[in-house]
Amino acid sequence: MKKASPWWLSGPALLLFAALLLVPLALTAVLSFNVYDPATGPRADEFTLEHYTHVFTDSYYHGIFWRTFWISGLVALICVLVGTPEAYVLSRMRNPWRSVLLLVVLAPLLVSVVVRAFGWSMLLGPEGLVNGMLKFVGLGPVKMLYTETAVVIALVHVMLPFMVIPVWTSLQKLDPGVENAALSLKASHFTTLRRVVLPQVMPGVLSGSLIVFGLSASSFAIPGLLGGRRLKMVATVVYDEYLHELNWPLGAAIALTLLAANLVVMLSYNRLVEGRYKKALG
Image (cartoon, rainbow, N blue to C red; front, side, top):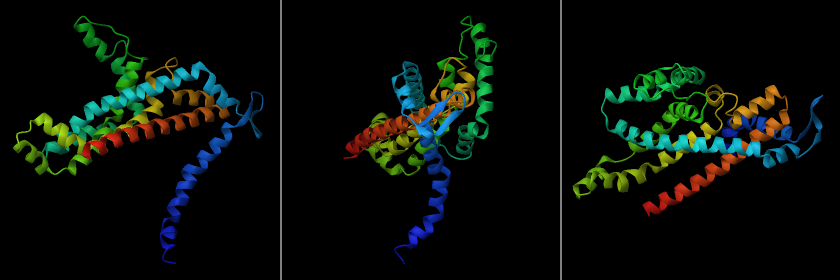
């Protein structure tokens, strides 16, 4: 009876997890194999691999997946380069400035992503503030709205808190005495950061970059509003297949392909970074 107690205690949470995630995912997987008839819609009694074959063999979808992953990778890289030093500065500040900066970091999460996307569209538009400043200094106007640049800028703004918080949490566990000991042994500040601080905050960098990459790859609102109809990413294509083309099985196949590709990329990255992290500590 005692051995079964953990299962009884975790049973409700597992059932809720299955009901909210596993069951919809299984239904989506079944839907992706259904035959689609333009006249009648999906046929639940007929199954095919045509939708997956279409996704894997059509260069149109290859280009969309490539664009999605390179933009997500670039956003994750920028967030690492900006968020890691920002988290380090945040960890070294004292109240009340730490609370003020933390509020600034978390402020984007307090506003709807749609509102933020519209805000960036106004800033980056032909008559927006950015182009107004470029015109003032004689460098504009520059087309930024409905480009990959606009999508990357807005995604970095949205995703940066998801990078800062995990790194900051890792830095909170770092003993300042270790850093001071390295400095007392004549190590430079750069060497101390590279050999002492960075290896110990790598778990935070790893988790933050994985979160940013995954959320960026599946983002819909920002690519849809700032990328326009021509600059498509996977999430916008899934939306089009579901609501415009009404081809639900193809949309489900694209969504599951994105999920599988996301898992492959993230697990490979996790193994690579964790291997180097363990090697550095060893």
